[in-house]
Image (tube, rainbow, N blue to C red):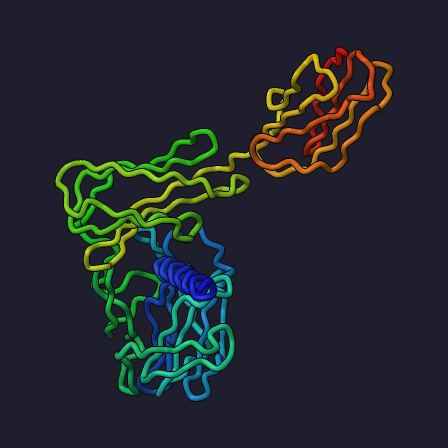
Length: 366
C-alpha cells in the first residue's frame, strides 16, 4: 500500500510541477513551410516573469516525427529577445531549417524536465533526447507549400488559447491574443507577508471574486498549496498561509494564481522575501545555571546549520574542555558541558561559529 501512496505522490507532484512550468513557458508561434523556398522560419517562446528564471536552463528542441529523434536545439538565453507585455516576454529563434511535417514537432525543456511537446501534421512519440517517450500531439492547424512566408501558426484568444494560422508576429504578441482577461474574476487589493518568529505568513485581500474555485500559491516556481476561495463575493475577502518549510538561506519568490470554476488559471501577483539568515551574536548564546555546579548548559539560538568549535578555559588560559565540529541546527541548541572534575572558579567559554568568535564567562561554585 505504501508503494502506491508513494507512486501517487510522485505522479501528483510531477503533475503540479508540469502545471506550473506550462504557465511560465509556452510555445507561442512558429513558421515552417511556405511557397517556393522556405523562408523566415522561426520558433517563438513566451516566458512569464523572465527575470525570475535562468533561461540558460530553458531549451527548445526540434523533433523529426519520422524517427522520433531531435535534429536541432537551442537555449532560450540565445534567442532574440522581443517585446514584453503583461509580465510576458517573447523570445524568437530562427533555425537554419525547420522540417515540413507529416509529422514533426517542437518541444521545450526546463532544467531537464519536459514542459511542452507539440506536433504539426500528425502525432508521434519521441525516441531520443530529453523528450524520449513523450507523446507529441497535433495542434490541428498547419502550413502548406502555398502558405506565405510572412504567415505562421500561433496561439490566439484570452488565457485559454487555441492554435490558428495567419500573419506572423515573431517577437511580439500574436493577433487577437491577450494574457489577461478584461473581465477580471478577482480584484486583488493586497498581497503581502510578515515574519512571525521564523515562519513566513503570506496574506492577500480581494475586493471581489467571480466564479473562483481556489488560489494557488507557489514558492520558487513550485506549487506549495491550493486554498479554496469563497467562489463569488462582492465584498472583501482575506486569506493567509503560513509557510514553515522555506529555505532561509536563499531568496524566496512567491507567486499567487487563481483557479476559475472553468479550471483556467490566471496569474495575479508575486513578491520576494529576501534571505532571512543573520549572524549569530552574543545575545543568541547563554549559559545556565550561572553560577553552576557540576554541569553547565550552553544554549545557542541559530538561524541555520553550522559546525561549532567550543573550548572552555580557566583564568590561567589553560583549555580544560573542547568540543570540535559540534553540529548546530536551526533553532535552539542545548549543549551540556560536564564540569564535574574541575574546581570552583571562573571560566571562559570560547565559541567559534561560522568564523565568528564569541566568548562567555561562567562560574563554578561547589
